Image (tube, rainbow over all chains, first blue to last red; front, side):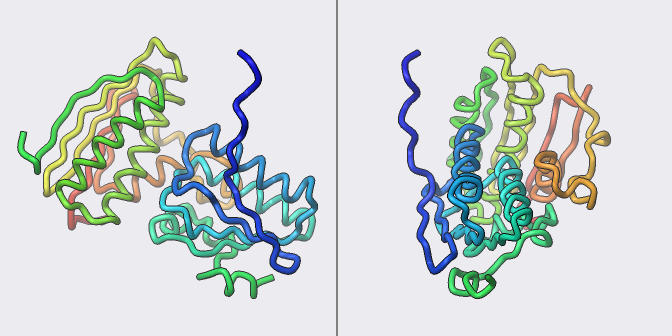
Length: 121
Length: 141
């Protein structure tokens, strides 16, 4: 095998003040490799780029399986360990149900939309 | 086969791309029967979780092992039976992922989601066979 295929961009990151606002490019967050790459990109924001306030905007995400939840939990923990904060917003009804069933809605800070999310930092 | 009743019996290798093709066929059948967006989300999620379990945890991605998928879609209900060639498992042995001591563990939520999003779920044999149903307008809808 030759060199790996170039990595596709999976996240769009916009700085609003000192908050990194992250939008997902994909409508579906599935597949182990895809989720691994999204996780790596999210963790890099904290570990390498030193971001401490992260707002994940799920506005574009229509579908997500349980495989992605582990990455969100790890991101939450990473930010907590450096006195940072993770907020999520614009979550579709079905995905919100996933958070409620797994009780992760109690762990995560969730806002209705991006302006409301920004207020929580 | 009428447009509102689809039934199929497919056997695929332990390959998630193959599983994805079956998922698309099922979604098309649900759309044809005018299932609600919420029911389609619920079934898609349960399917994704169950097929990943069969391919990854059951067959351990072994290309020589197969997954049998038998399903039926009618305007009233969706039924599916997924059989892998793995050693099976006891669902009772899976820790509750919502318990405080487990909440931060990165895995173990697939079965919980299946139980909540589907109307009926049962494991058979050594635990390598799962049957799931979604009854429209039924409980859990």
